[in-house]
Length: 346
Image 1 (tube, one colour):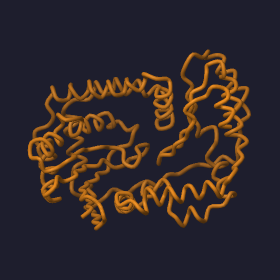
Image 2: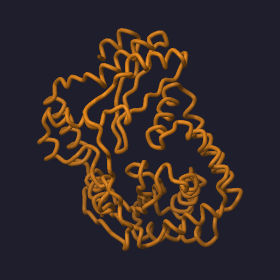
Image 3: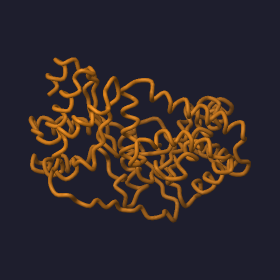
């Protein structure tokens, strides 16, 4: 497969797996569109799992590198197990060692037939192509795509957190301080306000957390708030994070993080501040359309997570509709003690 792609002018052949999806991608000359369809139809309809044991060994080694032998990896694995009670976000993307070792070729084939189905796959084709020709080739090569039995997927719903949780680990690492709060999913009505809240707190050097903890008080080397951990297709976590400066304590960064949150909840977001963050966020979204590869990935992400790639464009309009009080009210809803999971590396 890879040899054919390279011989025919393909570049950037790769794949990646996140907790929400697996992506396969490469760039092909526009006159090779039919070859692309032929190759992909073979990949997804008639797979051959060569070198299974070799690949399993690669995954085990990757787990050792990223989790077992990495202090932060160990911490985050335990943190997610504590923060989520029911939702699969509590489990690591790469899996646990005992599960990886127990995998058989039959297990992989069963998984493939169950989930690699037409209703679960989004293709993104961007470039110098003819839409009608692409539709014709899609019908030719994928019109008869049927794999396994259709199964109804059910996702466990995470119960509302009722009290603060905590994870404290003594590891060979720099000290870390994290507070995770359950936040809305990617396609939720509150999502635009959530992205703007993220910008208010940690959208660059002028953001509230960086300016306060890093520049003014110099108690942290890093300070941020980021949503969508470990994924965002479903309701997930927004993480307040601080890496203490040398000689500064975890308690010091905790107190200032919380002080900034309380100030935000009490005083709200200034209209000028919100306008600046809207402009910045729009630019970051529009940058995704600067290359064919990033545009295809961006549209596929919206297709997979929301069911419609056009939602990528609707989001830009939704950002304009968000008011300062929407961001403030969301902060008041999210940043409460009972919704918090504290994590520390000491």
